[in-house]
Image (cartoon, rainbow, N blue to C red; front, side):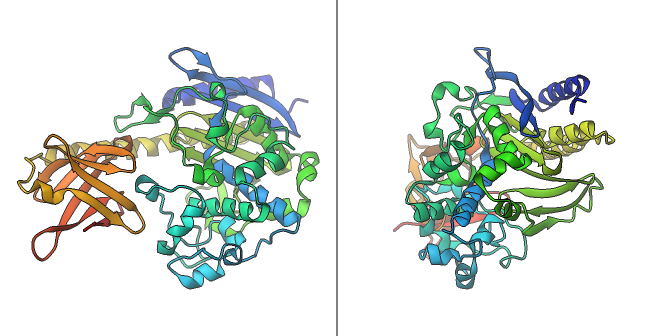
Length: 479
């Protein structure tokens, strides 16, 4: 008897097309594996819309944070070989590692890093302003990182800790993280079309067009290719294709392949709950939700599953596995921050295991649409309320370099009687509104506000930059 019938596959394909149309996703690659074999693999839409170039099973997508499962696996290989311990203190391996909380710095272990239970704020907004050269460079500013929670008390997702896990691998092995995962994971698994960095990818295999959602709910073609933060590769930098990602899925749903790389004991540890994320009280379909090492661990309608999503710039990915059923699903797409992978994987589980099909698409889409409407309304109100005014007479006082010990430098310059702010390598036009208040439209056309501050003599001494809705950062003017 077939595990998946032709009618079920047809239903799945029709559902994929419905999702792509509703969420406006240009292309998807979808693969199902069962008992170590591919039972379905297909591409939908175009890699390059203008030239009508279709997706293939070898088209490369960035898998984003699904990369974390590879970094956790790489650490597992070192534990297996006796070169590292799960509970070994990070400070013993990287003496330079330091947080604002010295006790936390000394106490944190490899296990804490892997399980996102360090308690450290995510500091994702730091990527917007600070130039970070390499993984070792992170150690120059972690001393300014503060605790959101006490260590091991709550789940606190942090990409920098995974980047530092990559640095630990490099210190132990004397080769780059990129080389280590390539030689010790990709090659043994036959993942010949998987790359640990965008720099390694053959250009002709990459998705040609990148798209992101903007504030008007339309899809625009990105001006640039997917931005690459090489130092974050261990947290989210792997590029792969649907064919190879099915092989990765098999590692966790096929005992034969798993035993060629890691022992049952190590795999069991990777997939063991380390920190509770939530009780899932608002969803009757799920029970508890925990995090292991690079994997979310959940129970869905009585089925224990492991999963992880990835979102980086213009890509979304999802890998979802039910180890007890030897079933895995992988979804790769070229539109960021859309939940199609989660919606599709749960639909497939409901269909295959004859459950009542929960309308996850409506739940996710209604929430998405409501949030979008609120953003559009707020954005419209902002534009109506804010009136641009002439620049101040003391324009030179506003110019110069502004510095924050954690967030880096900003440069305010005057070009043809217009003020510009330079953040990293990008410049944005400043709009003056009232007194010392300015705004600009930065990365992805997100509106940001600047407020200048005065010292006792009335001279400009600092500025506050609104990094996000919740974070405002003070930059001191360099004398």
